[in-house]
Image (cartoon, rainbow, N blue to C red; front, side):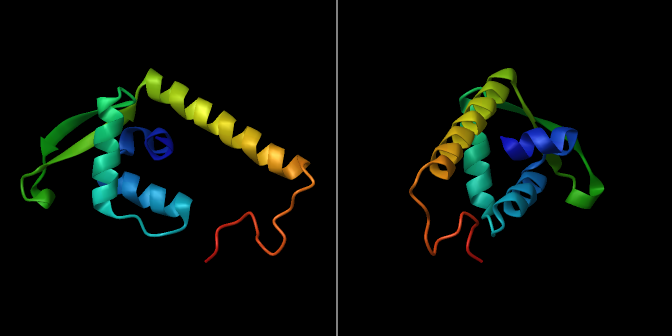
Length: 105
């Protein structure tokens, strides 16, 4: 949902895949993006529509996505939860030791 929200009117399956890979700092399979977008649409978090077919796509239409109010609420709740969890670890006496909070590369 973050990628769809950030991409706004440019959110297609391919641009969502690229944005998620950028944010996650790792490769993301296109099939995973299709499945996730379908599930989010089934839950009412996003909606999709087909644009007109274009010659550069061999006459096939592009599917675009947009986040719906329920998706905005779910995204805000997830961000709030992640923030609380991060603050709890930062404020505790428990430390990661050799482990860093960033993703290994």
